[in-house]
Amino acid sequence: MKAYLQKLGRALMLPVAVLPAAAILMGIGYAIDPSGWGADSPTAAFLIKAGSSILDNIPYLFAVGVALGLSKDKDGSAALSGLVAFLVIKTLLSTNSVAMLQGINPEDVNIAFTKIENAFIGMLSGIVASIMYNRFSKTQLPAAFAFFSGKRLVPILSAVSMLVVAVILLFLWPAIYSGLVSFGTQISKLGAIGAGLYGFFNRLLIPTGLHHALNAVFWFDLAGINDIGNFWAGKGEKGVTGMYQAGFFPVMMFGLPAAALAMYHTAKTKRKKQVASLMLAAGIAAFVTGVTEPIEFAFMFAAPGLYLVHAVLTGFSLAIASFFHWTAGFSFSGGLIDFVLSSRLPLANQPYMLIVQGLVFAVIYYTLFRFLITKFNLTTPGREEETAEEEAVTPIDSDNKFAVMASQIYAGLGGDDNVASVDNCVTRLRVEVKDMNAVNQNKIKATGVPGINIVGPTSIQVIVGTQVQFVADEIDKIRQED
Image 1 (cartoon, helix red, strand yellow):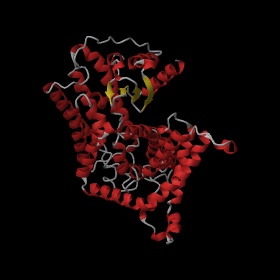
Image 2: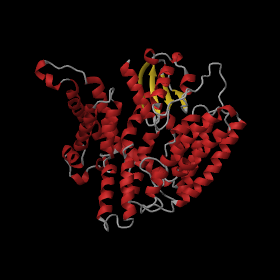
Image 3: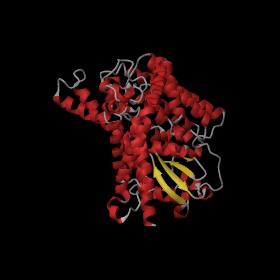
Image 4: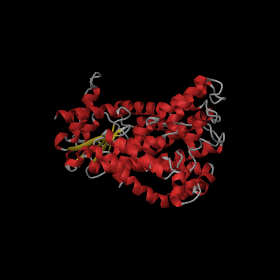
């Protein structure tokens, strides 16, 4: 189950990666016309509407992205099946359809069905479609129906499956929706404390991938909160809408880069150079884009107590920003790009104070991390025990560094004899191996990767960073050649 949830989290990265496009378009549009919502400028209106066309259709993106991401060979027919599945269920469970099925007036239909087009239903559609694809994409039908064999069969079966799902949700969705609304409502009633609790559990759940489910409640229109969509659309209350986003900026832009600096300063002298290159790249990625996995995975499993401190500090950051009503928003993550784009939006409230808060958190993170690492001798990057098999870093030519890096990593994983499958998310290679004992972790670490995470008897993750896609592509070339 844990492995499947991790795959789901990885699949969600594809549609989530589209959201920055909406941020750029809407951010520029609102910068041109910050008070008229595009009414005073055709150019602004054009850009704002273009951005909203993405944010308003997140369920479709999730249905297609999840189906594609969870399919065994990432085939386009799986993506098409995800779209078909979502279209079926969103039509069958629309207010008018439910009214007809239940024999009542549309105005008497449970309000839950007015929210059937949401991220959760999109994900569910994608999951069902991926199951159909993985199970039936190579099925052969009798000669009379041969045209519908294989991949052509998948959209049909996905549509049929969603008929069953629609019947089940006709009875379950009102209860599910009510439970989610109740949960979200209770958290939202806690104000700053609720925002803090959300921030804490958001970070705490990252190792399992379950943070995506939690995010869906607060960030998207799953329980009526829709913090991201409402903030960028200007629908809500100034100083309140955005409270589940604002507190991430001080942590991602300042706190974690400061933690990276602390880990560099506490590294062993002869390893400082290697740690410096790692932490500099990771710190820049966190500050500019808000992608924090290269830093977090560097100490998440090596020093779990330190990661717990990070989760607590994140909770405090969201609570503080919410308490003082400082708001800014993001479409991708809490980095400089989203901060600049969102700071001109109508619902942004004193966003510059998040910079002040961030500077304070940078001091807190650096001081706490440096003290805890040295006090308890934590095994953060550059502080690992020396081994007799420690391998030298192989110089990587700048013209083909990803090819060389991929070759070394693949060899460290055991090559064709040991590697069963390779996939990647936004920062990590996710590898299934036949024998974990055949993996040479020292050889992999010698390439300068931020870290390695063993997640199961045959599952290993190699933390590469935001350029992981290039390394993964080179590994695919190696596997195809062999």
